Amino acid sequence: MNLENATVFITGANRGIGRELVTQCLKAGARKVYCGVRDIASLEFDDVRIVPVHLDVSDAASINDAATLAGDCQLLINNAGVLDFGDVLQTTEAQFEKAFTVNTWGLLNMTRALELALQKNSGAVVNILTLLSLASMPGMAAYNASKAAAWSLTLSLRATLAAKNITVHSVFPGAVDTTMLAGVDIAKTAPQQVAEAIVQGVIEGREDIFPDPMSQQVYAAWRSDHKAVEKQFAAM
Image (tube, rainbow, N blue to C red):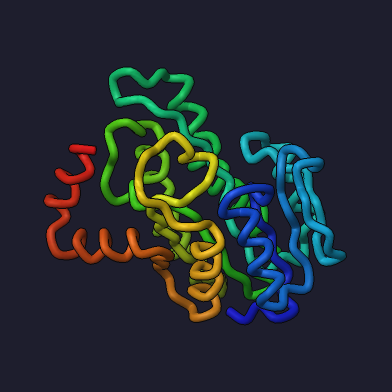
């Protein structure tokens, strides 16, 4: 997809990967970037191409309002996400519900809401998933499950939306240096590098994007022996 003069909608656009995706889309020549955030004041961009949008992906009315505003959207990047720590036996039902509401249903509902705009504009959807969609890390049980479900939904969306001339991209980052993983002691990739790779992957038309060294290495290992990767992650 050529991003020159494109109109983009990014959820969770005020920090981490989302914030860098805004910058990289603008660098790629986007004409307009809708920045969906819960707190408009948290946006720090000074560019006339930026359109701040109040958005809570857990709220149907908020999603519908955003979609009405963004009828010219050509590229939807579902980036908004939440992470609570806890193993599968300790994580509360409320924590699971929050994870699925944002990470799974938020992604699906945003795509549904913008489907007609994307179809009209021969657009694309980018779903920011995680390596933990492929193999679970026990201390992030709700996050693992919600992102694995999001991957499955992404595959369904890709198959369904192909007939409507909408392409769907899956992104599987490894550990990224954001506030979400601030307490995790592991080698991390800078969000700018990850965002650059995502945008380049979209431009090149790659359906599955592994945007950092960790994701590329783990994916290669997973393809070779997914049980070995499962056991490796289970020990973390």
